[in-house]
Amino acid sequence: MNKLSLRFIKAAFACLALGLALGVSFALDRSLGARLRPLHAELNLWGWVTLLIYGFGSHMLPRFLGRPLVHLRTANTQQALAIGGVALAAIGWLGIAFGFPYALYICVLGALAQLVAALLFVWQIGQLLGA
Ligand code: HEM
Image (tube, rainbow, N blue to C red):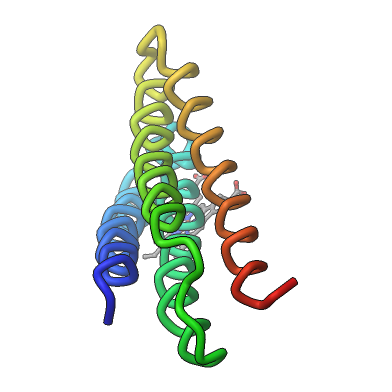
């Protein structure tokens, strides 16, 4: 497996571990759920699910189609934005939960990075498919 896909999959599993741990903590202390639910959703949906799709997609689609990823540098930028975006948004959500004054800005920055990463992924796969 190439390094790009492997990094995505490792990051996805790290998010799964954190996201599930939060979910279990909610079951033990219901008040945590109300505060940290957005962080749990961020880590599970953007962290675990989305990063795993990027990882498997960038590994399997070039093999299914018999063509390599067209723009490797863009793929690396997309990865930095995707993983960095999840990390920033997660820090932002944590900050919001604990009343850190600039947390909302950190969260929005992370969300924007994730949005650009998602659009770059669509473009990258579109190029691969010849769309
Ligand atoms: C051990 C596994 C998990 C446990 C124990 C768990 C537990 C919970 C709990 C207790 C809540 C409600 C928090 C509250 O509002 O008080 C919640 C919300 C949520 N969980 Fe999980 N969760 C788990 C795994 C997952 C996974 C794997 C995903 C997604 C892939 C996920 C996605 C969500 C989302 C999106 C919400 C927010 C729902 C809403 O706002 O209505 N969870 N989880």
